[in-house]
Length: 564
Image (cartoon, rainbow, N blue to C red; front, side):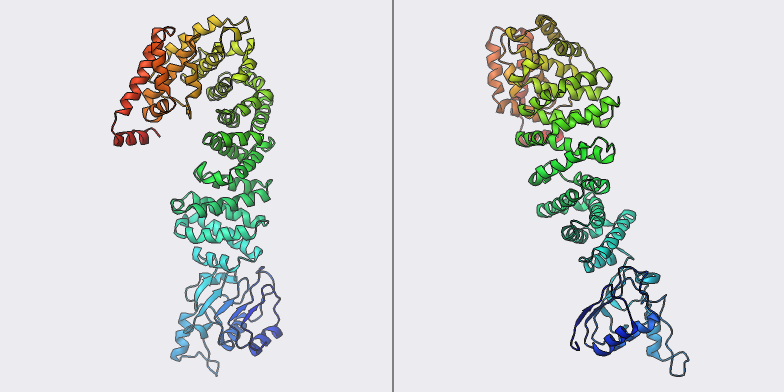
């Protein structure tokens, strides 16, 4: 025991006998930890005398942690006294008196401690000016708090307090970029070591949000981003029902690049977000931020990830949200984004289109149309989704219904959201009609009347109109160009290509060429069936693509950047 170098008595109750024994028999101590997690308990009598005894008798001591105690006294050091009890006016006593604000540590002024733990000490000891230590933990500033977090990384009770203090410090000072790198290291270590400690996960997730929304996030590499995301997901999965933690986690995830930063954990993210939107009773911020994030993910992924969303019942859960809003006659952002999410999830994904139909999606469409007829964003999202369904050949017979077709026919005249609703209604009808006259199995509305109205609608649209639409492939549109038996289908398809290559040449001209569109258009020009207006639009598309191909590469790059 005499040769003991490190002694940790964290949360051990103090007695004078124990302290006397330490200072008398453990003279070779280098590190002494007598900190307390609860600063209201176990206060020392004559604290300055106890601290002075430690400082003078343990001459090899380099590290002392008195966090959570009253050992640092109430303020500046007590003036030194000589043997007669009068103020000691010697030079050494005066120096110590001026340079030490921790009573009891005057003897360490010229031999400062390597570390002094002052977090949570009474009377704000860590905020004093002259403290004889090279490294100090406390709550006076970010530096002291980070040191405290590193010291208490394995002590959940203390660590939780430190992290909360660190969060509030970041929140009010906005100086988190100055400490981002070090804070990230501390926070991630804390989250990884204490996954099941909610009171650690919550402040950590809040601190991560502030860091990730700052400019320092641009310096964070791929590996560290993965650690951050994994730490967030672990904490959220441990406390799925905690609204604060789910909110913090979702808000922080929003600060990453979607979907590229999350693809490595795509299924976990999807599962968590769907859990966040599944409970309609939780009609709050978590539900909203989760569905927005889910929609963003669905918008930017390919068929495999879209199918995975369907496998996790994304369609069913969106329809569940829609049913709740219909019951309450509430058209809000959640209702609109639920339809937008399904629009994205069904894009070129027949399995999810089928899920929509099998779960009574068309009835929800009609109910929303009836209850909220004037909501432009809602209508655009619904018709975009139905456009995806109509692209699936084997599902089109399920749209061959008088009620559905009459609705689509009426929407051809819609001016809602510019041309978008009319455009999507025409697209749905064009795909249905492309199956040929024999596939039109209803008497009302008449196929000929619908096709006449479809062509008239296309002619009303402005070919130079900017669009709120994103095509990843032109395959469904190019397929319609082969429908020589029904030129009106070709009319809608070639107008779409003419519009997109006119307004967004850098984005869509190369897509037309890559998918063989130019050859199909030349074949259309040579064919006798298409009427002249169709061929004129076809030439516009060809000329747009040729003009773009003749642009210098440097100019193409600039145009591409401008169109992003």
